[in-house]
Length: 364
Image (tube, rainbow, N blue to C red; front, top):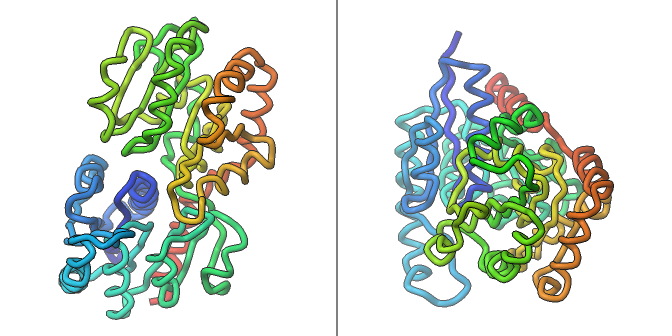
């Protein structure tokens, strides 16, 4: 049997990295002898996270365009040319059967060069509002796997397939991990656990909110696992105590989800997909600082089906306390939110995306 080779590119944030790793893991389970190579941006978090997941990675000298005039913008053409040249070299040397992009700066030049060299490409778009990189790449890509309906205005309809977002497979059966999770995080099994997720880099406004409300939350016999993000860890680690665990990053997401009774989260596409599978009561606080306010749209898709609660940043000071306390006291509401969000899960996304990749290999 031929030994297949795959190049994957996704980075900048966990929302691009973990789908790429999930796809690689699924392909590896089907083709144990296959070779995998990731391509990322030199100074971004994928350069640490991908090797931790057991895969080799090469870096490109690339960054996004800033919205204002900066030295970084002036360097962009040079970085792009350098990244296209290096992508060409990587593809020529590695000779992949398929190149897969899940978003992030590095996937642009890499997939562009793969298209130019005639290597089949697949894009996985996580959001309800695609980024500029994927919109440009979609013209030449062979297949586009999307997580939301009605993206025809961005992508060629005949190339699109609705799969949902790839998620870590260890999240699919967390019900049996509660005892292990309580032991792992050294929690009090008799207290409710609040999990706060601000994304891998952190979310300033959410951290400010938790800092302000922390005493009140603890007074309700609630323990907190607060993922404040690596940008903010130094500011908030002083709140770490027996009852409050302040962390910059969580390695065992399966266990932290198993431990949580209520979750407060941003509404990035990958997080929303994971939370549907996890099926816990969620309060979404979307980031307003993203293109086309797509986090609010992601959250609304769940809230409209009565699967979560949505609080905008502008509502936090006036409404958070009331909303959180009401949810904490209402076990029936918690149960209802859990059941409703779980119905929206697409747990087969990773397998379906891998099926599409396999079809591209077979067409060659």
